[in-house]
Amino acid sequence: MSSNAPAPRRGGRIAQIRDTYRMTAKSDPKLGLVVFGSFAIVLALMIALGFLLGPLWFWIVLGIPTAGLVATFLFARRAEKAAYDQIEGQAGAAASALSTLRSGWFVTPAVAVTKNQDVVHRVIGRPGVVLVSEAPPSRAANLLANEKRRHARFVGETPIFEIQAGNEEGQVPLRKLQREVMRLPRNLKPAQVTQLRKRLDALTTTPLPIPKGPLPKGMKMPRG
Image (cartoon, rainbow, N blue to C red; front, side, top):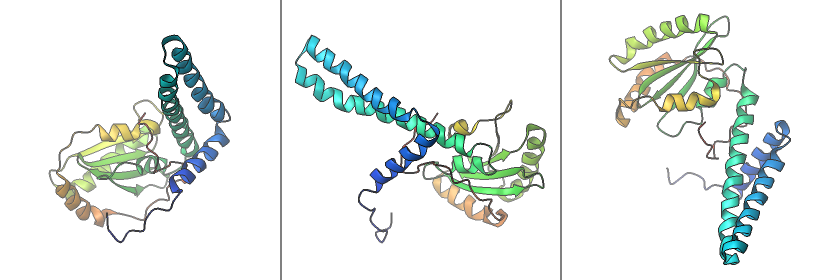
C-alpha cells in the first residue's frame, strides 16, 4: 500500500457496520431479534454453565466474546443474503457479486453485451481468464463460446473458463459465484496475471454499471 494513501477515518468501520445493519434491516425485519437474541441466549447458556461448573466469573468472561462471535456470524450471513436479494435480477448483478473478490482478482464488467441485454463479465486471476455470463441457458452457451474464441486470440495457451450465472438448472446462483470462481485451479503466477491483464485491456468495452447493492467491501463476509 502506498505511503501517500490517506489514513482511514476514525469510526469508519463502525459507521460501515451501522450502515450495513440499517440497509439489511429494511429487507430483514427480524435482524435485530436474531442478532441480539442470539447474543443473549449464548451468554445465558454460558452463565448457566458457570453456576453448574464454576467459577462463574470465568464463564462470564468467556461467554461475552463467544456470544459476540455468534451474533456477528449471524449478522454477516443475513447481511450477505439481503445484499444478494437486493441485486438479484439486475443487469450486472454477477459483476457486483464478483467485485468483492480479494486482491489478485480483476473483474471487468460487460466485456460483451447483446441486444437482448445478455452480458459477459471477465475475471482475471491465477486460474487464467474466467468468463461469466448473465443470460438464459439457451443463449448463454453460444455467448460464452463466442467470447472464448475472441479472447483465445489474445491469451495463447492461458486457460479460459466459462461460468453461467443465474438461477436456472446448470447455472451458478449469485451467492455461490465467488466460491465457484475461487475453487478453480491456480495456473498462473502473480506476474503472469499482471501481464495477462495488460494484454486484455484492448478487449475491454464500455463497462455496464454495477448495481449499487449493500455488499460491504470492508466487512469480511462468509463465503456461502
